[in-house]
Image 1 (cartoon, rainbow, N blue to C red):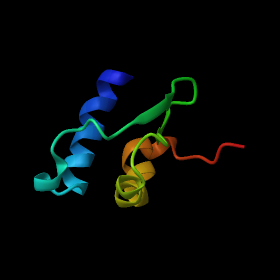
Image 2 (image 1 turned 180 degrees about the vertical axis):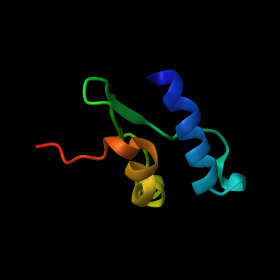
Image 3 (image 1 turned 120 degrees about the vertical axis):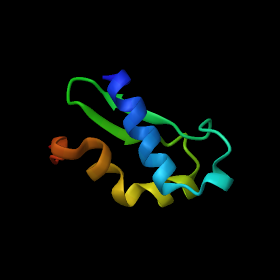
Image 4 (image 1 turned 135 degrees about the horizontal axis):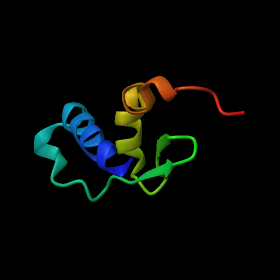
Length: 70
């Protein structure tokens, strides 16, 4: 799953974050639930980055796996 997620997340981030301010990806942290095949933005990621990428993250990264967990 990691090998398919890396390029997908990288492409998403490049599209969402201004290239000049990006620098590197060391500020981005993600958590993965392999059983549920779900990815979310870790709280280790700075809040300004979370706010910038959160609106489209679930739809673009989790896609068809977008189901409420409950």
